[in-house]
Every structure is written in C-alpha cells, then in structure tokens.
Image (cartoon, rainbow, N blue to C red; front, side, top):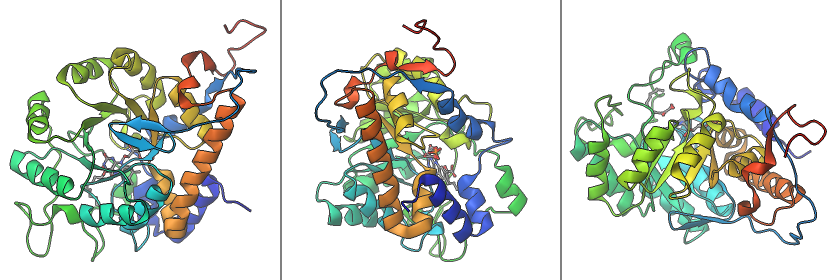
Length: 363
Ligand SMILES: Cc1cc2nc3c(=O)[nH]c(=O)nc-3n(C[C@H](O)[C@H](O)[C@H](O)COP(=O)(O)O)c2cc1C
Ligand SMILES: CCCCCCCCCCC(=O)C(=O)O
C-alpha cells in the first residue's frame, strides 16, 4: 500500500525518541494555533468549475527567479539529523528531485554548503534558499549571509515571528533543551560566541526593527523574503520597504499560540499585497487540496514543515521524495477536478466556508 502522510507520521512516531517526536510535532502553549492550522483547512471547501477546456496541466510557478515544478516548497525546519542520520542533504536531494525549493537554515545540522552541494548533485540548477534569524550583532548576521551566498543559495528568508522563543510545553515536560552529543547547528560555527567545541547559540532578538531589515537588504543582492507575516499592516510596510516576498505563517503554531491559523490570515495579507510581490503560506498543509485552497486565496505557493520531517524520519531521502510526490499528485488531481490547467486558474471564487453552500446561494 502507498503510505499516506498519516502513515508516515505514525512511522515517524514509532521510530523517533519520544522527546524528538514531540520537539518536531509540538506547538507553543496550549497548541491551539498548531491544531487550528489543520482544522481551518477542514472548514473550507472548493467549489469546482467544469467544462473549462483545460486538457493539459502545468503545475510550475516562478518565485524570486527560481522555477518550481509545483507550487509546494519545503519550509525551514531545524535539526534534520535528529530525524535521520543523513539529515539535510537527504532532504536536499529529495527536494531537488521534486524540482522545488528547499529552505535550509541557521538551525541545520549540516553546513549550508554541503546542503546546496547535495541538491546540485541531483539537479544542477536546484534552488536552495537560506532562512535566518537576524542576530543582535549585525556582523554575525552578515557572516551568515555571506556563508549562504558562497554556498549558492538564491534567496534569503528572514524569520520575523520570533522576537522571543515560543513556550513549548512538550519540550519543557521532557527537559529537552539541548541537542544530543554529536549534533549541532553547524552554520553557527566560527562566529563570535562560538568555541572550538560548540557553535554559537541562535539568539532571538526582540529589539529588531525595519532598520535592521533595511541594513540587511543593503548588504546583499539576494532576494529577501519575510517569514511569519500575519498582519496586513506589516504586509503593506514590507511592500513599501521593497521586500521581495512574504511567507504567511504562524511558525507551525510554535510561537504565538493565540495567533490565527495561517490560512485564516492569508486573504487579508494577499489583499494588502495586491499581487505586487509573491505571497507564500505555510502551516497545516497536509493535502494537495490544502495547497489548492491556499493558492485560490492568494498564495503563489505553499510550504510544508512537519510532513517533510515525517518522511525523513520514516524513510530518509526516499521518505521525503514520497511526501513531495504525494503532494504533487494530489495537487494535480485537485486542479483537474476544479477545471484548472495551471495554478493561476485557482481564484477566490472557488473557496467557500463548509456548510455555506445551499441551493444556489453561493455565487
Ligand atoms: C521541528 C520544527 C522546526 C522548525 N524550525 C524552524 C526554523 O529553524 N526556522 C523557521 O523559520 N521556522 C522553523 N519552523 C517552522 C516551519 O518553517 C514552518 O513555518 C511550519 O513547520 C509550517 O507548519 P507545518 O509544520 O504545519 O507544515 C520549524 C517547525 C518545526 C515543526
Ligand atoms: C533542542 C534544543 C532547542 C534549541 C532551540 C534553538 C533554536 C532553533 C530554532 C528552531 C525553530 O525555529 C523551531 O521552531 O523550533
């Protein structure tokens, strides 16, 4: 039988140390935002169109100069070697084989240059983006940016939803506050605050402002996307500042537990951006139909976090390939069922609240 994401989640749970499984799976506080990310998709339905003559389908999208074979990319998740000994290079090979973007990041357990090399061994022009938390000392951030540029990353994703680290009750219960011996955030080596034995800790910086972002953008030619935007006011400022893209995200429910589900925040952000820059979304995407709903509501693409970790833990590179292929095939199928030939054919008129369509009242 072909394993579904639910099967892979269960396989991952059986294979992983419960402390690691909970670190991957858990959210902040009472885990309301975590739960809502998936639940909010279940409250939405697609109202398909018919007889639109879409004989062939092309799933590809272009984002910040990179062409993706499908509108699903891999969001940054920390510490892939906790899931599988091969870690981020296995994820990179699988993502390159799927023809989409891997966002690796500061909290990778393999240096960024090895991650891009693994992706490019599979596909010469594989796109890898680098996620970073701006550090309180600009020179540390700059050193990380140069590392990502040298490694051939094609965009930077600055996570802005984490002025402080989320209160993760599962981790607190387990006392899980450090990596096992032999694993580290490898991109943090050789920076101020690092020692020969131990990389510098990743700092969260509550004092950051748009000035810090302006400084970063002046220091690099790479496109800069902001990850963790939920408020349309911030989206408007980001566009005015010249940011290259936004990722609507509540960090997989791991930061502000009182935040709305990502899919609920998307329409207002998309409206504020009005097509001027790409808007992406992550959080709770578990099916091709979730991706279709997000695209219909204004996203150019979606990211997946935990599903990739489940695939990696369950079956290494093969498991991640399987996750991405499942999502591609499901998205393609849903697009066909909605009468679409490309992601651009999905618009807001196709999305309704479940239970709201009665006898022709909908449109
Ligand atoms: C175990 C784990 C680690 C994560 N690490 C990071 C990270 O280092 N940087 C970041 O910006 N987001 C991180 N995230 C958030 C993801 O990028 C993404 O926003 C979230 O996982 C999407 O939700 P999903 O898991 O429901 O797909 C992490 C998420 C998880 C589950
Ligand atoms: C196992 C020890 C935890 C140390 C935390 C380091 C910060 C990494 C940030 C990862 C992240 O964003 C997440 O959501 O988790």
